[in-house]
Image 1: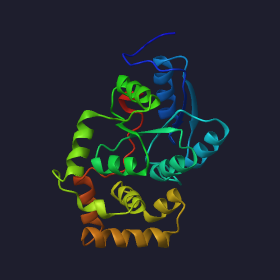
Image 2: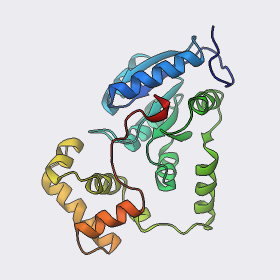
Image 3: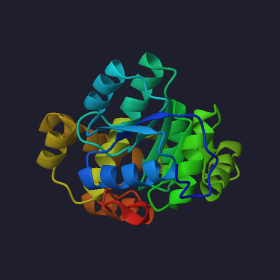
Image 4: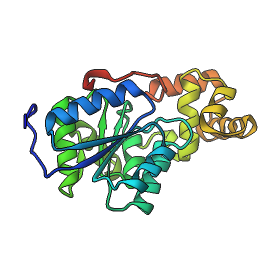
Length: 230
């Protein structure tokens, strides 16, 4: 057995990687199996596929992205918490904004990392969750605590629902209403209604102002790919 990273080794684990990008899953699989050859790594490309996989094989830790077509990562976390409570959930997202981490933890996740984290940190997070603990990078954990304590003012988009936040991200990322509808399996009318509600809640006059707001708060849905973890 080769210990490639300075991370605490756990007992043999079964892990489930959930990401709609095959290259991301391939990179993560390589990292995790290099960390501990005893770890079995399953893969799923969507939330529905992940639930089906958990139904066949129980996983100790699920590593999931928040941005996926169809069922969102937050929806998946809530379903896993309700249907497979023994499976610990580690979010691996491109979003470093504390609002995403707060929503993920509220949905039932036990850990949150961004995709620009170092490989060793991913291994530590998996081991920590498998041992029954929780994990967040130091800088993110500090901002989450500040927000929960009221030391950090809550941004306006905190009042958005999870679905509205998902639509907001995609609008800021330049997606058209029809593309968002296809990706989220919604009607264009429903997506248009979400857009209207978002503008009202954020008190913004138009899409251009919404995009500016999203960029200022790092809410875009740009595809960053595997990043340093890959």
